[in-house]
Amino acid sequence: MRMLWKPIYSKIIANWTRPDNLKPNLEVVILVTITPHNGVVKRVEVFDSSSDGLFDKSVVNAVKKYSRFPKVWVDSGERKFDKWLFVISSND
Image (cartoon, rainbow, N blue to C red; front, side, top):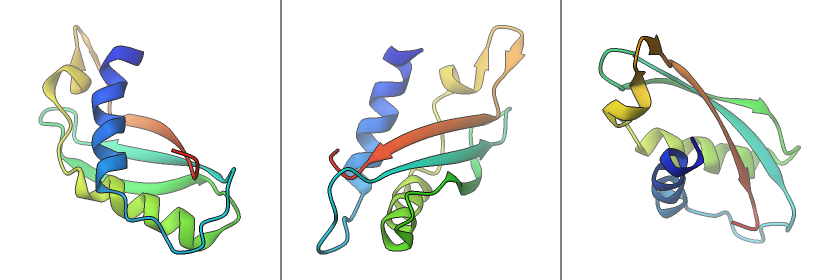
């Protein structure tokens, strides 16, 4: 699964506009809900906050820019995946 995750993670990081004066070592966990049949992002929310609202919001916005997940992420055989967790660090 890690190999599938890396390209998505890289695109999220590329879309990320980091806040000014970003503190090091912050970490936020983002929950992404997608439509299983087509990979369209339905919802992006903070699952576990970094306690820095500006940082958290900047990461949520970066994930929202990634509007559709590739088919391989959506349908793996008979099991449909509609929720994904991403851990993003201010050091990324």
